[in-house]
Image (cartoon, rainbow, N blue to C red; front, side, top):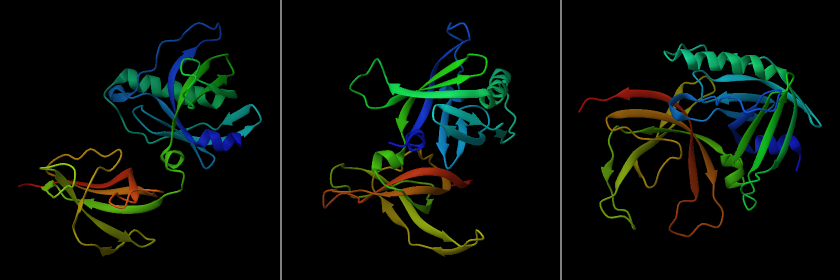
Length: 237
């Protein structure tokens, strides 16, 4: 497998770091208990799990890696330590020099690898790979916009009595972001991966839709994964 493709095939969740002396460094806790995560896509690397989204370019050459100074979405956070950690991460990333990938020692049967990043001062980050949706579903997605109604409704589910479905309708936009079509409301059986519905809140979601292979005749042929929330509105009863 091409090394750049394998980098892009996973979300990399930071679980350990050591200093230049090889001794463990204090953990970098993410916001709301999340792990600090690196994602590599289309020559860009982004950092999730802090106050802001950090993003920069990257290039690999064999075992060498270079990362440009990341830019931030510039949102202020009340957690001062989180902001300090974010600043430290933003300063450290451009000093990355080397990378390597290996199978997790503690889980020999788990194909997910561990990525090690080495920095100029000898600091090392160890990150466990979690397959991206494209890796899990084995295909590239179609981008779809779904409006989700503020309330779930009772619907007839073949396996779950008294099931409450999301109500959704598809929205289409032109290249300038102007709405060109609004579909009919329909029940959505199952869940949108990564999306947690809050009663009383109407959302427009941008989702990545993956076509599934070899599914039973009565099962959905698609899997939807949340990409971002485009609109959100509290709707009064």
